[in-house]
Length: 99
Length: 238
Image 1 (spheres, rainbow over the protein chains, first blue to last red):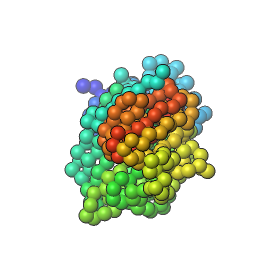
Image 2 (image 1 turned 45 degrees about the vertical axis):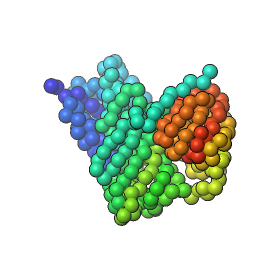
Image 3 (image 1 turned 120 degrees about the vertical axis):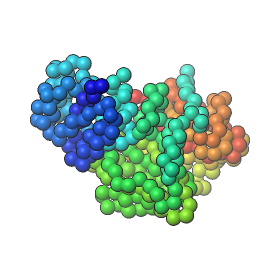
């Protein structure tokens, strides 16, 4: 079965690494982590992402820019504000987005 | 008219990790129940028991208001802001994870269990500066009355967090009743029984049962037996 691709963006390197690791604990999911908007925009064109998780540290200007770009490129993309930082909320956030 | 949702104690998820028994009121970690995601801004209510000397190693959080209320034993906290503390029954700890924080939590006791509630509230603002606070409460201030232990206001009683939320604890003798006024329009209250039996607007709740109530501005609480309970007053839309 093809894995569901999930793009994770966050500014804190250790927290981003934790979130990516936890997402990848689910054998059906594959996470790509990006620290910068530029990396995220570049990564978006290379994979068929189903979900984008916006993690901690992303300011409103960046968030607005990213949202606009992702929705324009792929209107059915699910964009989720991730709360908790690689915590017990992660799986439920993704399951809710994939409903 | 008031709307309610009843969460009986035995409908919570029990996660048994050997050293940790966690009763989870809402979806958490590997537990996903679309009917149990949150109650307004209340996202996590974990009722945890940790074996002596065991605990949660260093792990990160961001953008969440995390409140710990010890019920028995001592919980040792260390974090990346160099806070080191042990909190015990009668204390409350609040942490705003904001832009990111690492912390660990261990049972400080080498012989007895620690029991505590861990409660997560969605913040009303993302990416705030991380902060940590803990205070000791006077247990007498909740005997037959409601003791405020958390609010949005740094100058008010209890700890404070980045959300329009208020927590109260009550330890009522059998037959004592009070009226609770919800603190803010469009807030609701998640009432969680710690021990004994309470009655809210005719619904009887036993130990570890919970009742969510909203679309009302007040309700009555009566102790059916000697009882302890926690009221979590949170925005229903946030």
